[in-house]
Length: 552
Image (cartoon, rainbow, N blue to C red):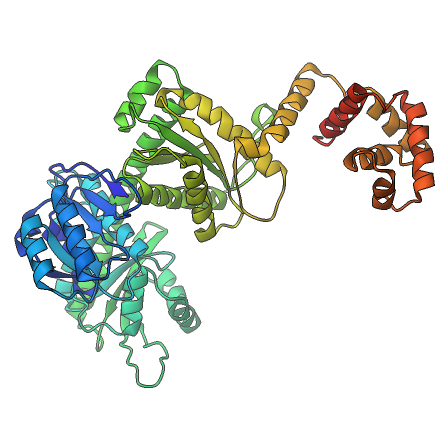
């Protein structure tokens, strides 16, 4: 669940509907609510208690029958929601019409084929733009700063062609509302929030992207190949640049070449789009840094932690701390690893995705990249029982969806009743991350402290030995030295014996020798190491030394 308080900068419901247009959303009923401000987004889950932002948009995921939808509308009305969004088609029954009137909530239909996650992300983008642009008094070219949807509509009016504004990776940042005659490629692009791979490959083979990088003038793009019976319109695209940096592009769907005046208008629009993209990016960066600083302060503990938590809206409620890492942690006091710009960008991308994922669970969740780790705070809410299982499911679900070059790992901390104790939670999740990275597994992993407690303790003991400059002496050191000098395998023998709980036959089989040979080696290692393995304390000491020696 995602949300924020309604303020002067909050967009009107009518503005949201205009920005997303009939391509995605259609007003079914409740037109009187279009002048209401939107304060956040709620992804409805009947199994969870929700924190409802004022004038929220309720995404009724999985609600199909009119009876179910009527119940959702009444629930939304009880929480002063602005609108409920359900999957089209919606059958307007008498009960449903009555619920719309009684709830005083607008009902919107979401186009079939549009992913709920994409819609939630688009709505979040629109709400964030309002936050970044403040009260709307600051503008560029007559459009509120950073408002790419309003700018897309303005460009459409100038060139009389529906447009999309895309980033360098062909992801849709905004689109104009007049997409009524959109072809299959444009519809797939808007519904998926990015250009489908087959069209990207086709444009690349046509040399479109190379031409966009080469020139700042509009580029004519021939229709991509389509299946028989389908129609694709040509495009005119223009690069969006800030100096030498390629920020993205504008794509207009046309029926023929643009006139010189309209071509010039598209060229000029690209400069204005660049200013808006830079402004929005700057505003987003500022908000990101502020939240990262506040979260970092909260994690450090001390007198300033409670104030930071208050500014994050997380005082006086139990929370769970999660930590995500996409690569091995830094070298600490031994030095620092120089991270390439690509690695930093990848970490920020995963951090942003993690923030969206947690935001869909709870409105007051917060996440930020602090150093090399993304920390996320998830409020527990009214239902505390089973929170550990729920947190693991949330983490596992995220890892199953996100694509990353390095397999990420997530550590789950304990439930913290007082968020001022987050510093203790950070110590716990950092210990878990260190163990997960030490395993060097090829699969993504999620763990709690109980899952890795022994390994974490061994790592800490090894750290103490290193800090003191101590070495691992005793029986294992003597066996290792003897093996090195004589080419024997006495250390392997004692490891196999301990791992087999003293079962000679099983241990001998594991090292591929006859049981009698293994008995002889066992007797010999007792002589070399000067240790009596029939003594339980001696066995424990040997096992501990073996484990610590593996930490090197």
